[in-house]
Image (cartoon, rainbow, N blue to C red; front, side, top):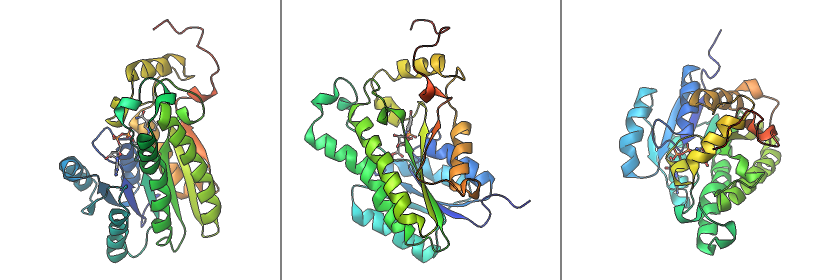
Length: 264
Ligand code: NAD
């Protein structure tokens, strides 16, 4: 049986270290034979990303700050030159000022609202536009989201609003690009201990709450998101687009605290 991703070329955006959700999905893609290129957010992160990229056989590592359109364009210019075509993109990028990932949403500043939307929502649309132009045989785009878009979650605040916009943009992109056989989906991961999550207030409490109250009574692992990411980026999900797929040990179906959950 040929590997699921044999002959497929894809761009991974958002690996910061070996705990990044994008890295969990990268490992699953590589095990199935995908050829990979990476972006990194600046020289400080290259030291982290370079050995990871090399460990999965990649030597394409491109700097990219998504707040800068020239920087996004430069990435796709290089990929056009090196590969000519593209089969998939994984977008695992989000940012909000830490000082607003605690306290009240109503106190969000205009500047941080716009910056959070720009990095965490618009960047996926900007990337989709450039990527789609290279997906001559169709393709798949996946972004990462969180349940704080659907229900109020303590401290998630403006990021929840940005994720709601991101999930809506996934649906609009799915319609626009579907005619070109390009599928667009979001993977809604349960809480995971990553660099980005360390900025969220009381994150340890959120992790514990999910562990105690999700139907599977545990938190998700990099392998859990890896398998689901592989599904969404491969032909296994060929009939799926515009979807927000929950990989959260079932937490999003729950309405109340579990009967066996102790007080925390
Ligand atoms: P992470 O810190 O490993 O990854 C976040 C990435 O965003 C980093 O690689 C960082 O360099 C990149 N980034 C931030 N600003 C950028 C910019 N201006 N230009 C380019 N890159 C930029 O953390 P993670 O938890 O793996 O986050 C990945 C995605 O998963 C995010 O969209 C996050 O919201 C989402 N997510 C996280 C959780 C969780 O609990 N950790 C749950 C659900 C969804």
